[in-house]
Length: 304
Image 1 (cartoon, rainbow, N blue to C red):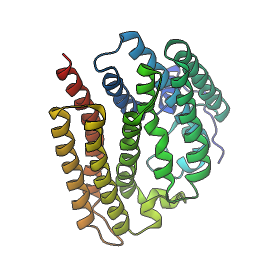
Image 2 (image 1 turned 60 degrees about the vertical axis):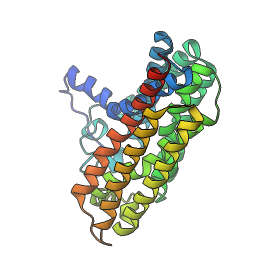
Image 3 (image 1 turned 180 degrees about the vertical axis):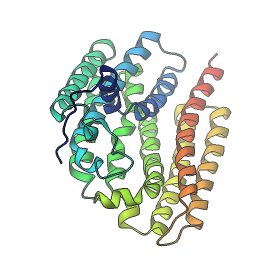
């Protein structure tokens, strides 16, 4: 699909378009998991400069990856109600300009992380970008119903980056944190995909609600939610966390599973409760943020 560029774009509109390319709301969620991970790794608050450098580098890397994603997916974005106002669809900038912008973001991200954090964190960020762009966007998204399951690994890397930024190493605890975000991604995204099932169908993207019955989709959401709950309970002993985290993980996991169970119980093979799916989707964002914030609170209270 060819999109014509308007010559009357204001500077404000162009700037907003470039910001939109980075998907800032997704970046916010990724960074919410980074700082608490750093606090857990440091058993306290790391240096302010290290936090800032890690967040800036991580945000730039994620923004570049998202921009590459929009360049590649601009044809299907034009077919979907949810994405048809993205800047490459509306013609705010050319695909070439967006690609150069993405490349620049990745170069700066690597430089920031390598110079002011460490090499391990820099290469982890680049590996997440490569995985998201190549494995998820180019290979899986249009071919496999497991697209978001496998592709979700890219969104879980910030936990590894946060840990490596502090320790310059990895271990069992950051792997568990990675797995928590990895297992959280399918129920989070499939709940949204239930709402936009027709969009994905029109764009021929084999998202789970399109290629499987909604009864099957909601069952998988429930299974992932329960496994996620179990994984969060393993983090406490691994990271030597206390009662604040233990209670938080138990209660939040129970609530997440309750929302997933209710969605499954009310789903039929051809129809699911969209309102309940969106409640699960919105709660999943609150869930992940609260889980990681309370993890940090636990550390700060116990090591004060």
